[in-house]
Amino acid sequence: MNPHSPTLAELQHAVRRRLHGAADDVSPWIVSDGFAPDARLSIYRNTATAVLVNAICLAFPAVQRLVGAACFEGAARRFIDASPPNSAWLDEYGAAFPAFLARLPEVASVPYLADVAQLEWQVNEVLHAPDIPPLDVARLASLDEAALRLCPHPAVRIVRCAFPADAIWRAVLEQDDSAMRSIQLGDGPVYLLVQRTAEGVDVVRLGDGEHRIATALFAGQAIRDALSIAPHVDGYTLLATLLARACFVGIASAPGAGTRSGGSKPCLA
Image (cartoon, rainbow, N blue to C red; front, top):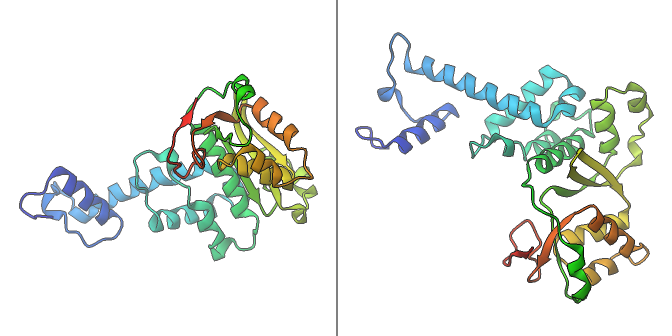
């Protein structure tokens, strides 16, 4: 940054870096007015951190209850230091928090914590996903199943958890101690369909084969290929259920177009 004539963008980036521990010297552009530049930055840093901690709290309420407010805030602050946000849209901040918890030694005694966090993040994502009209199922009748690929609705996710995270999540949020005591951690893994509905968020368990088929469908594989992955499963019933639940928004125009990671062709609504 030019110390004599920084642009507004340059100054903003320098302040951001300084707040996260970089050596950028922004003091020449801070009016002291009775406070040293570092003291002013410290106030701003504390405010920004508090806002980010609150955003993490809102996204992971069950995780917070599992470890307690003090432990959760400490973990959130360490996460913020390690992974500051790249966007001002805080609804998108926290995707890496489950993986961060999985590596955090202080919570290693709660082995299912990262799974619960991953489930909560998927719930957060479907809650903030765009509202797109579902696929008109009647369009499928005249299309070739062998090449047909479907585009998943952005408000639906498929999640695999090593532990019964759905049961833990519900018991914690409902403060149901009896349900929590009855959970057997060895009952995992669980395969979950997470979907925003008009009433809220549904979390539905799938079987292993259903999970593999649904994952293939959501990845943009042709219907016939996806159903063949688990021939022992009634794949057509599963497909009908997913269609009835409005889990798809359109038909992919090329292989892989239904993936969230960047298919080259758009979905055809």
